[in-house]
Image (cartoon, rainbow, N blue to C red; front, side, top):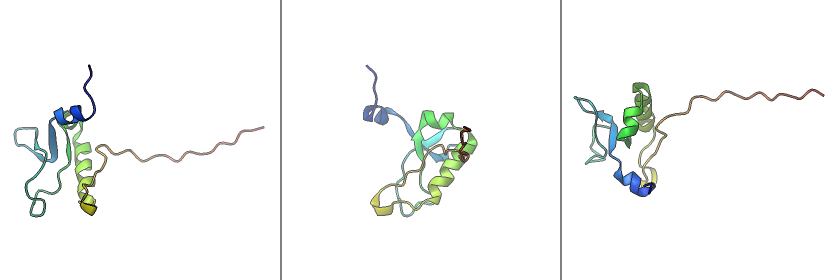
Length: 97
């Protein structure tokens, strides 16, 4: 039977993209002191997702997360892990009769 949903979410190993380890990989997600931390807000993703991302995607995700105001209304601030590229405007074509 396939495992999905919340069971899968808890089973994944979550890492902080903003805190790479010296030998490779990333530190576990989370932090001790939210107010006094110098590290910045964590951008947490599953380890498998982090391994599949390029350096540019990782930098972009961290930058977008830290640029938003954090903890508004006591809720965590979420940003998309992989940003969509700019969309081209669609031109409306008229049918010829």
